[in-house]
Length: 300
Image (cartoon, rainbow, N blue to C red; front, top):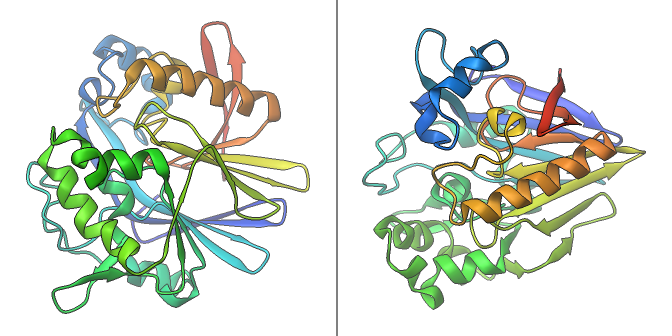
C-alpha cells in the first residue's frame, strides 16, 4: 500500500479506514525483533517479502499509520503517528519531521473537528505525535472536540509522576511534554485502567508488556470481530514465533505472554488482528498451530 492511499474495510457495521503517515524499510529485521535471528526471517521469506521485509535486503518494512474507526456516528482514531516538528534526537526518521498527515486524513473524509475519540494504545513517540499541533509556538490538541483515552499505567510511567520513565531515555520527557501534557492541560484527557468501553462495539483492554500500559482495542459488530493490537506485534514473524518480542519492549517476557494470549483469543474468535505498523494489507486473520500461529488470510 502506497503512502497516499486509504484502505477501507468493514467489521459488521463498523467502518475501518487506514491512513498512512509513512511506509518503507526501517531497521535490520533481526534488530527489530532480536529474538528472531536472520535465519528465522530467511526461513519465512516467502511470507514476509516484500511487504514486511525488503526484497534483496535485510531491513524490516514497517508503516506509521492511523486507523480510523467509525461506529454509530462516532469517529475514533487509533494512534496518531509521529507528528510534525518534534524534537526526537536519536531517531532521524522522527526528528523534526514534516508531512501532510492531517491533509491525508481530510482527503479520507476526516476533518480534525470531526474526531470524537483518540485512542493511544500506548505512549511511545510514534503513537501520540499527532495528538497535538503547533499553534504559534504552543502545542495544542490537534482534534479540538475529542476525548483522548490514555492508559493509566503509561500516563504514570512516562509522565512526571513516574519521572518520565525514570529518565532512562531523555526523549520520553520530550514526547510527554509535546504530545500528552497539552491534552491534559486542555481538559481532554481520559485516563483509564483495566478496561474502558467506548460504545457497544468498542472496548479497550489492558495488554501490558510492550509498555506498562499497552492496550488493545476490541471491535465486535454483527458477529464479526477485530482486535487492534498496537505494538504487541511489529512484524508477522512475531505471529509465527510469538515468543519473540521487539527491541522496544519494556518487559519482553510479559509482552510475549500477552501476545500469545491475545493471538489465541483472536484465533478462537476468527478476529482480524490489526497491528500498528504492518505494511502490506495491514490486517490479518490467524490460526493456532503447534508452537505458534499461522497467517490465515490478509484483509483485502
